[in-house]
Image (cartoon, rainbow, N blue to C red; front, side, top):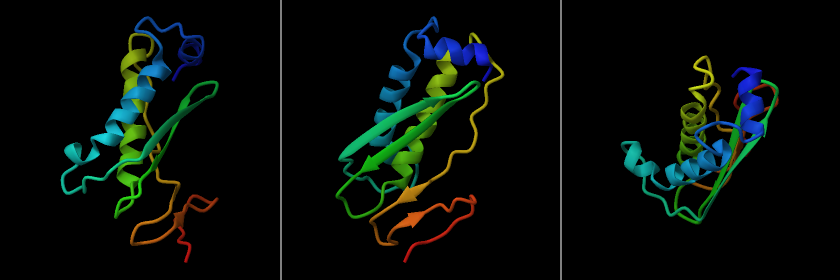
Length: 130
């Protein structure tokens, strides 16, 4: 996004309201409704969802952490939370900056589930822990 838009987000000066608060709520709601949005995705009992933001000179980074004690992982819930939070940032800021892009949605780490733990390597390529 344009640096001016990032400044407005950081200073809570976007006319639609508090961008990060709205995006956090949207991400949490999305994580809880993932099975309704994505065909073949198992409904999972979500224990907790945290959606956090980092603001740079020309970007807002979204990170989600989702936890469950259910039978499967919650990767899809975390990815959905990030994506919907990013879409909310776009929606709230589009009157200031239509050139924004949403990019690089990726899983960084998971634990539990049948496939076990997994962590993205520092080089950006996939790696599995065993």
